[in-house]
Length: 355
Length: 111
Image (tube, rainbow over all chains, first blue to last red; front, top):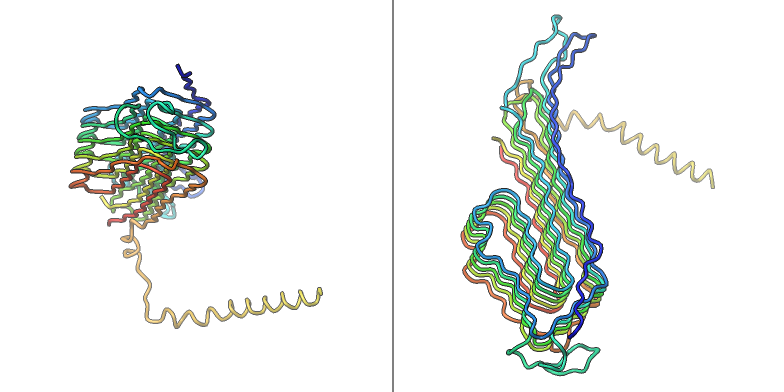
């Protein structure tokens, strides 16, 4: 029996906190006998994952089956969901969500009394800042994975071994990831990673920042959201003999509303990253002075380098069936079933609209 | 040497001085016929906004190897992604040394 060693090294997760603070104060200045009403809101959210998977080895026999399946899950959910499923090899899966949201009171301009001499600097001020940052930083390096055994059912085709052609079909190991009928009519932020083999790194990040209504004669609001992934898959090795890998999605995310980042992987070295960043401000046209600023940034920085993947016989298959129909919002989907690969998505949206 | 530098600096300063000095002379022509906005008109100009949306991907795929007989397989999308509203990005891959990237940046201002 081949020795099976699965190890995960150095996974550091820092989950950021979020806080919101609102202040209201009257600023009476004796020199000018003026009165100001100030409302100041600040909400910040930070979510960060830092992970490292290095120098691990994984080996399976040729009758090994690694299956990840989600059927009918999370239907009708509302809110935030991060889901990671893994069934093999070295892997690192990370999610990060950060939401900062400010909803002030009714958009009304409050008149404040001026001083008795008519020279005051009275007035009402509204200031709101919502900031959200979500980031993943990860590396998968120097790992090795072998599925099946050379010489039993096929021949390895890697450059360092003897050549030959696999026989295809028939026995061998299986690695599958399936998502069937899940997240139907769900609303909110959903991030899903499914993995069934080889070295892999899958990361998601979403940051949402929103400011909805504040009050004052002068209104100043800003919302910025930054989402980023930095990932590296370097120096890994994958050898498959008569191995069948498949990533399938059937009937998933039907009628979904919101932002979804989905990664499915079934083999080889791979790195898949998503990042979304949304920033939204609503304002009413009631202030005498009004300033709104949104900044949305999304970025992925990835490298897949100096990996080796060898597959003899078997198959690698991905399919997307009856999924993501009637969706509203942002959806980013990566499906991968083999070889070295790197897939990245990024969306940044900034919106300012009059209520 | 020092004299040369001083002379060059002086020359630059003179040109800068000319540019600044000549600016007021052009202003009347540029804004001729325009009337300043009144206080009420300025007060109505609310909702001024700054928008910035940026999306970027940067990738490196280098020095990877696959075996000479490395398998790929079926890649299908069926009955999916219909009737959507919004932004959708889908990547599917079944093998070999691939990079696929997408970046979308949207700024919306509705008044």
